Amino acid sequence: MKRFQSIWLVVCAILLVSAMLVGSCAAPAPTETIKLTYSNFFPPTNLHSILAERFCAEVKERTKGRVEITYYAGGTLTPAPGIYDGVVKGISDIGMSCPSYTMGRFPASEIIDLPHAYPNGWVATKVANDFYQEFKPAEYDDVHVLYFHAHGPGVVFTTKKPVRKLEDLQGLLIRGTGVGVKIMDALGAKGVGKPQGEAYELMSKGSVDGSFAPQEVLKGWKQAEVVKYVTACYDVGNTTAMFVVINKSKWDSLPSDIKKVFNEVSEEWVEKHGRAWTYADKSGADYFLSFEGRELIQLPKDEMARWVKAAQPLIDAYITEKAAKGLPAAEYEKYLAKRVKYWSEKSPSEESCVEWAKQEQLVK
Image (cartoon, rainbow, N blue to C red; front, side, top):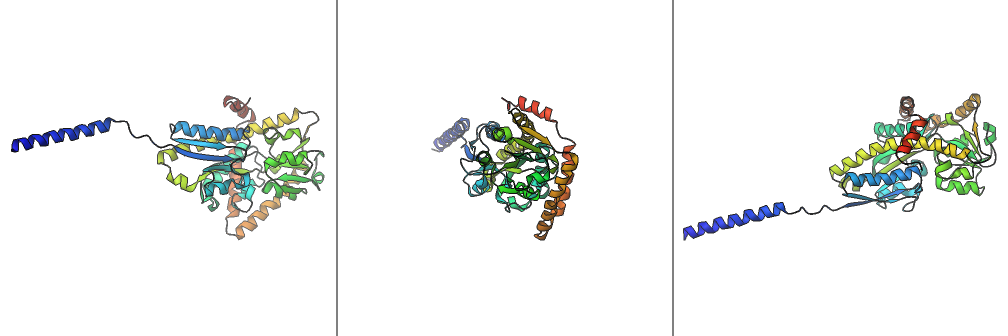
């Protein structure tokens, strides 16, 4: 009897081990795909919309299909001013838009957009990311920031009247966003706060006399069709910073290896957007001049100095106002000036950015 029991125990042990071995050889349960949405206000054909779509594809490839991002361009999921809140509320998981579309919501970031003599979008992009990493302003605490990018210096577009000196701006209605509106007011025009997506229609209908924007939009948003004069006021040198953020709860739920992929791709896309902005400004200016009767106005040095002097009170007012609210505004300004100088000395040439765009197949 005891012998029979011993044999039975051995048989049971063998069956148990066999079952374990079979189980270990079986195919692992499939990993559930993480599905996300991405809302962006740029039209589908814009360079930065293309880069955003490629961002989605790159994340999918590097995660071996574990992450799939459905991309919505042109504000079709959430409009430009509502993209940030859309991410916070989970309407989209990821969003790209501008802090300047909701003035007052991002008080620290406003200083980035003020005139700092940004020579191009690559420099502005680098500086915007440095600023966030240095100060981590609390205004972004309800999301997780992936990265920032920023366009090249704003210039004045007009549809009928050329602007060759400050006095020519008097009484003109000039569309802008956020700080751009304040700059137009400081220079003597009347700033009209409207998103970039409305600029073409506003100018074509004569609702405004022009726009204050980077030269990129002359081609990227087809505004060269309605703009006749561009005044290259580069030394005023403002920008518009743009965020790419992800819902905080969604970010916290991601596995660590997935987060690592997002961080790596985001870092690479900072460089891509920066170069794309520099290329796009060059491309926009060339496209504009390909139309008959168009003029790119270069301001004389002494006239440009008048514009810079007229805009300086905006920075002074920002420092006074934000310092009163407890923000280290003077420190912000000092830091930005240093970083603009630092990155300007390392900036790639327009020609190299054109070649890069060709290699990336962003140029048709």
